[in-house]
Image (cartoon, rainbow, N blue to C red; front, side):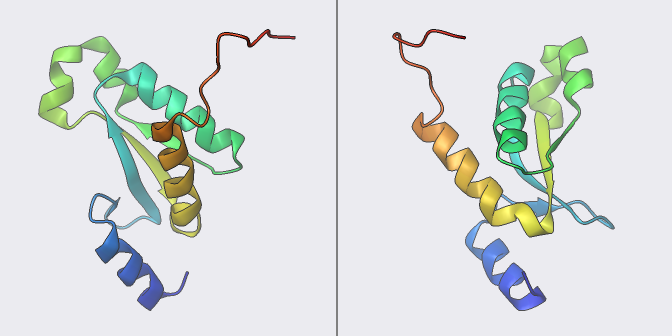
Amino acid sequence: MDHIALNAWLAANPETVQIPGRDLFVVAKYLIPMEATLAQGCLVASGIPAVLADAHLMQTDLLLAPALGGVRILVPQEYLQQAAAVLAGLARGDYALDESFVPD
């Protein structure tokens, strides 16, 4: 994604924020660490290198989560659009297992 396209995409997605001095962007925030871990797992399974920030801090004291903004999911710039699509699918329930699911 070139600089102009990136700026246009970021303007259309104001919740996505770049980490200063890095090629990483915050694509989601979760107040519950387990939900962040689930979302990260969906991103990684889709081939997106996603990392969690502040997950361990939130797990040690959940009362800090609202004050610190929750657990952040970070992805590189070239995966922003793909990550947004995966997270939208997760929110829609595309990855939910139904009651008939039987693990192998």
